[in-house]
Length: 138
Ligand code: AMP
Ligand code: ZN
Image 1 (cartoon, protein in one colour):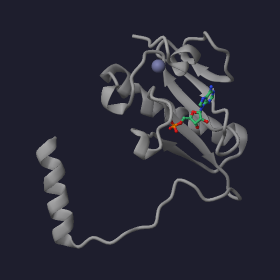
Image 2: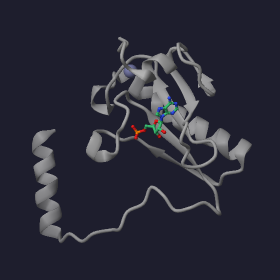
Image 3: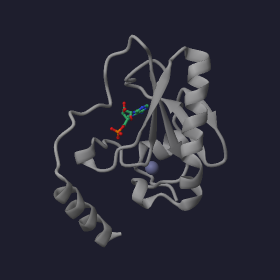
């Protein structure tokens, strides 16, 4: 299913031109127009899923290996030494376009720090309680 009002549906299906790095029957991977680093790529399913929770199994089973394949190609072609796979779900998590996408962000040895956080503290009891809380909802 496509969403007529979704820009990523239009890009993924070729109705809006993009800098495409990869395409198959299910996905189009394009360069992000506001790249975090040179080569920053977005993998877009051709069907509309608002986030990872809505993603169909057929897409979910392929998207991670595609991220790895594109990341490996970036290392060969762009000279990055690593890459991050980033996927935001919900506005509080930084999602701004509500059509599932997987970021593939090349990382260079001299690049700025990103995709990082300050580690907090949690004691064993708190970790156990939190783990049980999540388990009950699965
Ligand atoms: P997120 O914050 O995870 O929802 O990521 C959305 C990403 O889409 C951002 O990195 C934007 O720079 C990128 N973006 C938004 N519109 C376009 C577009 N028309 N073409 C390419 N990248 C886009
Ligand atoms: Zn869409």
